[in-house]
Length: 561
Image 1 (cartoon, helix red, strand yellow):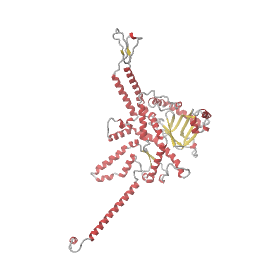
Image 2 (tube, rainbow, N blue to C red):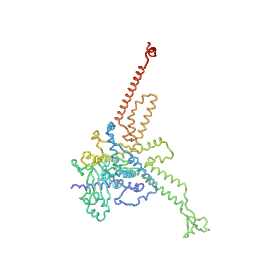
Image 3 (cartoon, rainbow, N blue to C red):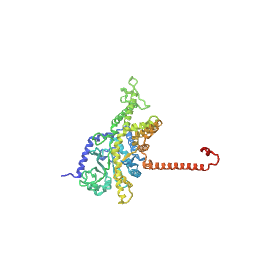
Image 4 (cartoon, one colour):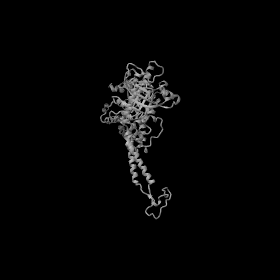
C-alpha cells in the first residue's frame, strides 16, 4: 500500500531530524551556551520561555562580537538608509537606452518601497546573527494581505534542511508551536482537529505542535496550474492530529525560503561560521575569567592559619576586627596560609586579552569597527588601504550571501510584484500595478542584479583605484607625448567608475543623450564660427566701401597706382 502524503512527510521529517540532531545539534547548543544564549530552540516546549540561558558566560566578548558582526553585515549589505542593489540587463549596450534605463530605475524604487513597508529590515539582523553564530540561517518570504509580503525568521534547532543536486538548500522542514487562536486565524476552524477546536472555546492560548514542509513538488502534474501542482510544495499539518487532515496544502511558483550559509564544507547541508571558530577561545576565556576571580578572591579573602588554642574560639578576618591569640603560642600567629603572587594577575590578564583579540578577529570586529579601534589618527588613504585589505577576507562570505540570500530574495519579490502587476496592465484587475509596464526591448529578457551596498562597493574599491591610477598615469605621460591620451576612452571610464561607486543611473547620462548633446554643441559651434566669419566679411566690405580711392592714398600706394 502506497504511503499517503502525510506519512511521507512524517517519515522525511523524522529522517532529517535524526541527521541534524546526530551531527549538528550538540555543536549548536555549545555555541548557544557560550556565545548566543538568546538564540536557538532545542525543544518545541521552549516557546515563550523566559528562563536564563547565560549561566556559562562570565566574559561576554563573544556575545558582543556577534552583535557587532550582525550589525555590520546588516548596515554594510542591506542598509535601509541607502540603495543596496540595482537591476541591469545582460546587454550592456541596452543599459544605455533611455527607456530601459528609466524603467529599471523605477522598478528598483518600487522594490525598495516594498522592502521598506515589509518587516524585512527587522528580520535581517537576526538572520545575520544566526549565520554568525551557527553558520546557517533561515527566513521565509510569504505573501501578506496587509504588507504585500512578510518575512519570517527561523532559529537554529527549529528546522531541518536538505540540499539539491546543485548543493543548494531546496527543502526546509519545521517543528514549532502555535496557539489554537493563531491556528484558527491562519488555517480556519474547519481545518483544525477536534482537539484544537475544543481548545478554541476552553483555552484559545494553549500551545499546539505544528509541522511545516517546503520542498520541490515531485508529484505535481505540470498541465495543472492549481496551488497543489506548483513547482514548490508547502504543507502544514498538526503533529499528532487527525491523520486524514492537513492544515493547509498549497504551493508556490518560486521557493519562499532562503537558507544562507556562512561556509560549507563539501556535501554538508549545514554550514559553519565564526561562532564555531571562536568557540574554543570563548570557552578558554570563561575559564581564565573564573581563575582570575578565584585569584582575586584568595587575595582579598585568603585561607587563614591559626594556633590550636583558637579551636572553638572566635576568629575573624573582617576589617577592624580583633582576634585574640595566646601569647605563649610563639610562631603560631593568626595569618594567611597562602599569599597571591601579583605577577600571576598580569599573566592571566594578558592571556584574557589574547583570547578576546582572537574572538574579535573571528567575528570581523576589526573590520566593522576599524576606524574606532585604531590607536592613533590615520590618513584617509591609510584607512582606505586597510579597509581594502580586510575586505579581501570577507569576500568569499559576501559571494555566498549573494548567491544564497540576496539573489533568491530579490527574484522572489520581483516575481511576486510582476504577478501582481501583469493583470492590472491588461485591465483584468482593478487597482494600481506595483511595477510600470516594461519597454518592449525587455520582453522575455532575464534581468541581472548588481549589488551597490557599502560592502559590495568596498569589494570593488580595487577596481576604482585601478581606474584612478590608470588615468593618472596617462595624464602624466601626456605631458611628454600628448597623443597618448587617445588611448583612454573617457566615456567608458566614467561609466565604469560610477557603476563601481553605485551612483544612481539617473545622474549619469546615456550614450545616446551624450551623443545628441555633443552633436548640438558642434552644430552651435559651427554656426558661431560661420557667424563670426560672416561678420568679419561684412566688416571688411564696410571698411572697403568707406575708403577714399581718389588721389594719392594708402590703397593706391599699395597697388602701385
